[in-house]
Length: 202
Image (cartoon, rainbow, N blue to C red; front, side, top):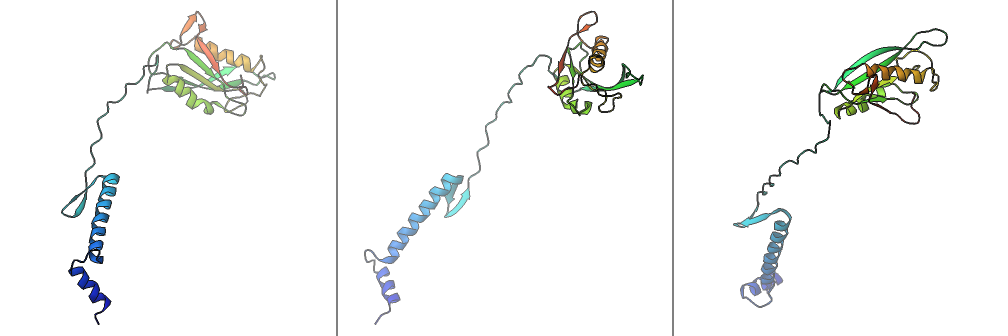
Protein backbone atom coordinates (compact mmCIF):
# COMPACT_ATOMS: atom_id res chain seq x y z
CA UNK A 1 0.00 0.00 0.00
CA UNK A 2 1.54 3.36 -1.00
CA UNK A 3 2.45 5.66 1.82
CA UNK A 4 0.65 8.93 2.43
CA UNK A 5 3.84 10.78 1.28
CA UNK A 6 3.84 8.83 -2.01
CA UNK A 7 0.16 9.47 -2.57
CA UNK A 8 0.68 13.18 -1.94
CA UNK A 9 3.56 13.28 -4.45
CA UNK A 10 1.61 11.38 -7.08
CA UNK A 11 -1.41 13.61 -6.76
CA UNK A 12 0.82 16.66 -7.10
CA UNK A 13 2.37 15.40 -10.34
CA UNK A 14 -0.95 14.36 -11.82
CA UNK A 15 -2.32 17.92 -11.66
CA UNK A 16 -5.41 16.91 -9.69
CA UNK A 17 -7.49 20.02 -9.02
CA UNK A 18 -7.16 21.18 -5.44
CA UNK A 19 -3.96 19.24 -4.88
CA UNK A 20 -1.88 20.54 -2.04
CA UNK A 21 1.31 21.42 -4.02
CA UNK A 22 -0.61 23.68 -6.42
CA UNK A 23 -2.30 25.44 -3.58
CA UNK A 24 1.05 25.77 -1.90
CA UNK A 25 2.57 27.43 -5.00
CA UNK A 26 -0.36 29.83 -5.33
CA UNK A 27 -0.09 30.68 -1.64
CA UNK A 28 3.66 31.32 -2.05
CA UNK A 29 3.09 33.62 -5.04
CA UNK A 30 0.38 35.50 -3.14
CA UNK A 31 2.64 35.89 -0.10
CA UNK A 32 5.54 37.16 -2.25
CA UNK A 33 3.29 39.74 -3.90
CA UNK A 34 1.94 40.84 -0.53
CA UNK A 35 5.44 41.22 0.90
CA UNK A 36 6.47 43.24 -2.16
CA UNK A 37 3.53 45.61 -1.68
CA UNK A 38 4.29 46.04 2.02
CA UNK A 39 7.99 46.60 1.39
CA UNK A 40 7.32 49.06 -1.42
CA UNK A 41 4.88 51.03 0.74
CA UNK A 42 7.20 51.10 3.74
CA UNK A 43 10.56 51.80 2.19
CA UNK A 44 10.46 52.16 -1.59
CA UNK A 45 11.70 48.59 -2.27
CA UNK A 46 11.70 47.22 -5.82
CA UNK A 47 12.16 43.65 -7.04
CA UNK A 48 14.48 42.62 -9.80
CA UNK A 49 15.35 39.02 -10.68
CA UNK A 50 13.65 37.82 -7.53
CA UNK A 51 15.94 39.90 -5.29
CA UNK A 52 14.71 42.86 -3.30
CA UNK A 53 16.64 46.12 -3.60
CA UNK A 54 16.15 49.29 -1.63
CA UNK A 55 15.35 52.16 -3.96
CA UNK A 56 17.57 55.21 -3.30
CA UNK A 57 15.81 57.92 -1.39
CA UNK A 58 14.87 60.92 -3.47
CA UNK A 59 16.96 63.99 -2.57
CA UNK A 60 15.15 66.50 -0.40
CA UNK A 61 14.05 69.57 -2.33
CA UNK A 62 16.25 72.58 -1.78
CA UNK A 63 14.63 75.11 0.53
CA UNK A 64 15.86 78.67 0.56
CA UNK A 65 16.67 79.90 4.09
CA UNK A 66 14.06 82.21 5.51
CA UNK A 67 15.10 85.82 5.70
CA UNK A 68 15.75 87.03 9.23
CA UNK A 69 13.20 89.50 10.47
CA UNK A 70 14.69 92.96 10.83
CA UNK A 71 14.65 94.19 14.42
CA UNK A 72 15.52 97.86 14.99
CA UNK A 73 18.80 98.13 16.87
CA UNK A 74 19.33 94.36 16.85
CA UNK A 75 22.92 93.11 16.61
CA UNK A 76 24.19 89.57 16.85
CA UNK A 77 27.73 89.62 18.22
CA UNK A 78 30.53 91.73 19.59
CA UNK A 79 29.04 92.62 22.99
CA UNK A 80 31.71 94.15 25.23
CA UNK A 81 31.70 93.95 29.03
CA UNK A 82 33.20 96.48 31.42
CA UNK A 83 33.82 95.87 35.12
CA UNK A 84 33.88 98.90 37.42
CA UNK A 85 34.18 99.70 41.10
CA UNK A 86 31.98 102.72 41.78
CA UNK A 87 32.26 104.67 45.07
CA UNK A 88 28.92 105.58 46.69
CA UNK A 89 27.77 107.09 49.96
CA UNK A 90 29.58 105.86 53.07
CA UNK A 91 27.81 103.99 55.87
CA UNK A 92 26.47 106.03 58.81
CA UNK A 93 29.57 105.11 60.81
CA UNK A 94 31.83 106.48 58.07
CA UNK A 95 32.93 103.17 56.51
CA UNK A 96 33.49 103.80 52.77
CA UNK A 97 31.38 101.83 50.30
CA UNK A 98 31.96 100.90 46.67
CA UNK A 99 29.68 98.93 44.36
CA UNK A 100 30.62 96.09 42.03
CA UNK A 101 29.31 97.20 38.61
CA UNK A 102 29.16 95.60 35.15
CA UNK A 103 28.30 97.29 31.85
CA UNK A 104 27.39 95.42 28.67
CA UNK A 105 27.87 97.48 25.51
CA UNK A 106 26.58 96.84 21.98
CA UNK A 107 29.30 96.63 19.32
CA UNK A 108 28.15 99.79 17.55
CA UNK A 109 29.25 103.15 18.85
CA UNK A 110 25.85 104.45 19.87
CA UNK A 111 24.54 106.44 21.53
CA UNK A 112 22.21 103.78 22.95
CA UNK A 113 19.29 103.83 25.35
CA UNK A 114 20.33 102.33 28.68
CA UNK A 115 18.81 99.80 31.08
CA UNK A 116 19.67 99.60 34.77
CA UNK A 117 19.38 96.00 36.03
CA UNK A 118 18.66 95.19 39.67
CA UNK A 119 19.14 91.71 41.16
CA UNK A 120 16.91 89.98 43.70
CA UNK A 121 17.51 89.72 47.43
CA UNK A 122 20.51 87.50 48.10
CA UNK A 123 21.77 87.84 44.51
CA UNK A 124 24.55 89.79 42.86
CA UNK A 125 25.62 91.26 39.55
CA UNK A 126 26.63 87.75 38.43
CA UNK A 127 22.91 86.91 38.19
CA UNK A 128 22.43 89.68 35.61
CA UNK A 129 25.07 88.69 33.05
CA UNK A 130 22.79 86.78 30.67
CA UNK A 131 20.13 89.48 30.76
CA UNK A 132 22.73 92.20 30.27
CA UNK A 133 24.27 90.52 27.24
CA UNK A 134 20.85 89.88 25.72
CA UNK A 135 19.92 93.54 26.05
CA UNK A 136 23.24 94.62 24.55
CA UNK A 137 22.71 92.27 21.61
CA UNK A 138 19.46 94.14 20.99
CA UNK A 139 21.04 97.56 21.00
CA UNK A 140 20.77 98.64 24.65
CA UNK A 141 23.60 99.58 26.96
CA UNK A 142 22.91 97.54 30.09
CA UNK A 143 24.35 98.28 33.52
CA UNK A 144 24.05 95.92 36.47
CA UNK A 145 25.49 96.00 39.96
CA UNK A 146 25.65 94.23 43.29
CA UNK A 147 23.69 96.29 45.78
CA UNK A 148 25.47 97.33 48.96
CA UNK A 149 25.86 94.37 51.28
CA UNK A 150 25.62 91.87 48.39
CA UNK A 151 28.20 90.22 46.16
CA UNK A 152 31.55 92.02 46.20
CA UNK A 153 29.99 95.40 47.08
CA UNK A 154 30.76 96.93 50.42
CA UNK A 155 28.43 98.35 53.07
CA UNK A 156 25.41 96.98 54.85
CA UNK A 157 21.87 96.19 53.73
CA UNK A 158 19.35 98.99 54.35
CA UNK A 159 16.39 97.50 52.43
CA UNK A 160 15.72 100.11 49.73
CA UNK A 161 16.49 103.06 51.96
CA UNK A 162 16.28 106.33 49.97
CA UNK A 163 19.46 107.49 51.72
CA UNK A 164 21.43 104.43 50.65
CA UNK A 165 20.15 101.90 48.05
CA UNK A 166 18.07 104.49 46.16
CA UNK A 167 20.91 107.02 46.36
CA UNK A 168 23.28 104.33 45.03
CA UNK A 169 21.07 103.81 41.97
CA UNK A 170 21.07 107.57 41.40
CA UNK A 171 24.89 107.50 41.30
CA UNK A 172 24.72 104.87 38.54
CA UNK A 173 22.25 106.96 36.55
CA UNK A 174 24.64 109.91 36.82
CA UNK A 175 27.43 107.63 35.59
CA UNK A 176 25.30 106.81 32.53
CA UNK A 177 24.60 110.51 31.92
CA UNK A 178 28.34 111.17 31.64
CA UNK A 179 28.92 108.51 28.95
CA UNK A 180 29.07 109.44 25.27
CA UNK A 181 27.64 106.05 24.23
CA UNK A 182 24.37 106.61 26.16
CA UNK A 183 21.50 108.48 24.55
CA UNK A 184 20.40 111.61 26.37
CA UNK A 185 17.10 113.41 26.21
CA UNK A 186 18.71 116.54 27.59
CA UNK A 187 21.74 117.73 29.51
CA UNK A 188 22.39 115.27 32.33
CA UNK A 189 19.23 113.33 31.40
CA UNK A 190 20.09 109.84 30.07
CA UNK A 191 17.39 107.75 28.45
CA UNK A 192 17.34 104.85 30.93
CA UNK A 193 14.87 102.28 32.18
CA UNK A 194 15.06 100.06 35.26
CA UNK A 195 14.41 96.31 35.21
CA UNK A 196 13.93 94.11 38.27
CA UNK A 197 11.25 92.20 40.17
CA UNK A 198 9.40 92.68 43.43
CA UNK A 199 12.39 91.29 45.34
CA UNK A 200 14.94 93.50 43.61
CA UNK A 201 17.24 95.61 45.71
CA UNK A 202 17.31 99.22 44.45
